[in-house]
Figure 1 (tube, rainbow, N blue to C red):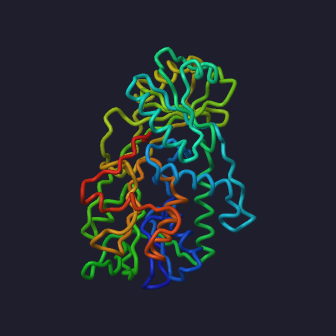
Figure 2: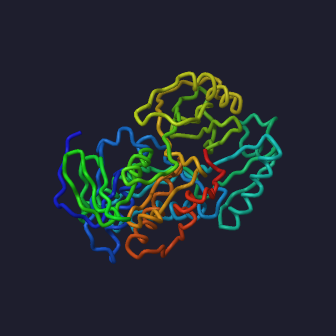
Figure 3: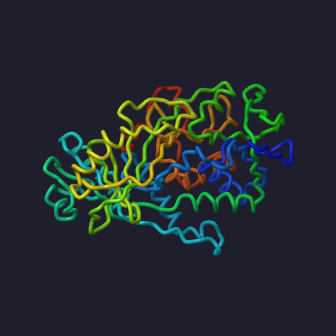
Length: 399
């Protein structure tokens, strides 16, 4: 790590972690005309080699089981589809959106009833989700083996893949133009004065005063919280991704299909992409990105070859392991201040849907810091107090 020094010894806002969430908060805050403070982003690895952002599948969906997550994704689509206007720069690229949708398949009555219930919630909030019978699935997706399937839930509208890394790059670029400082260093300590964060200590030996501290440390969120004597139920969990070529390509796009086996698979340009959690899904070390090659042979390939017989002959062309910042309480984000340390802001625990939520979350945290309240989308369901109360706000549509 090649250290870069901050220009000042005091900042109104220090953001710990400069990946997708840190960049979103920094840019949204810097463009807010009612905020005129100094912003510092501290990132320990500017290559982002091991950041969750670098291992994302860059997808967006509205098929969630809670209203707030549906609305967050709807704003995410609005932001992506109007990217030039949103970043106020017509030299910015358009962000193409590959609108193939998500498809959840149900093999039992309980999950079928669940899909029917949340389809009503999604539709009432403007999502285009449809419940498809087995015959309708056969007609629409003739490449599937469906003898064991009762029904599916499919939304062909504003769900699919986008280039999240380009959004990330432009947020950093525009934030810098707006005066945000990004430095390479690591926060190793937090000073407290009473019930407030007073400043941070960096690995370089520098001490920087802070008006607000924003925890955007991804899977390492716990480490940052503990420096302030706080706790958070977030841990790193492995997720596996495989890109493969098929000898017999399908004659149409494959929606991101969530198979009852726990494997998901979708079109990825000229290839296909599949992924899953391990069967033994537990916390791992922050540095553990070892690939388990048995996952492909024992779980992923058998599942996709069964569901899509054309995928009997495939070849893996790329594979990687990423980490979810997994909220063990309810698989939902934790957003906003700690009730006892009001200038410590959490932006953590996205459990795999952080990239698609980053536009709305960055906007919301900017409002919270600037005004002390949300002024667009109310994110209070994600407040830290539910952690204290052990009162989960559960999101059941976690992949």
